[in-house]
Length: 156
Image (cartoon, rainbow, N blue to C red; front, side, top):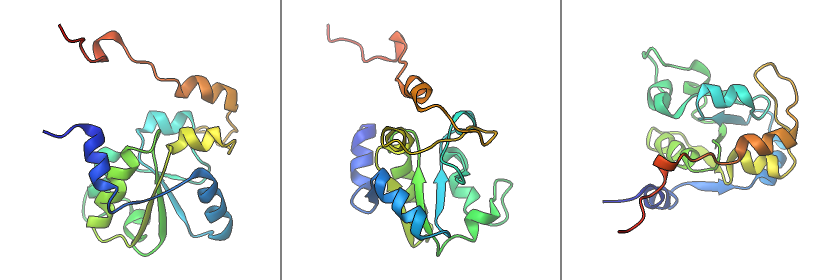
């Protein structure tokens, strides 16, 4: 049985990762670049990279194809565009980029460190209303909040 991080590691053999400063540079030089945010809608609403498209990881594969209730035309038509997939920390985006490659997307990368790393690199974030997010408040938002029952049981 594999663990989550082992699954991520296996997908890395096929998925390119880029750093936040690389994404900032690519956005500047390629106005057609699609930043695809695969976090849940409530995460996207709280803060995201301006201009990014939100397609939650849970519906990604059907959103990438025509004739599904979840179809996102902009995403279906982006098979030949440069796409950088983002999530909170850079793990879901690796799985998403891998799935997209399997589905025929040609130029997909994952943002290493995710939106959290984008923020740590002092890049701007906006909320669901397009208003700038205070990056100090973003620090609080991105601080992990594990409940006791989510922690690995200690060995007896």
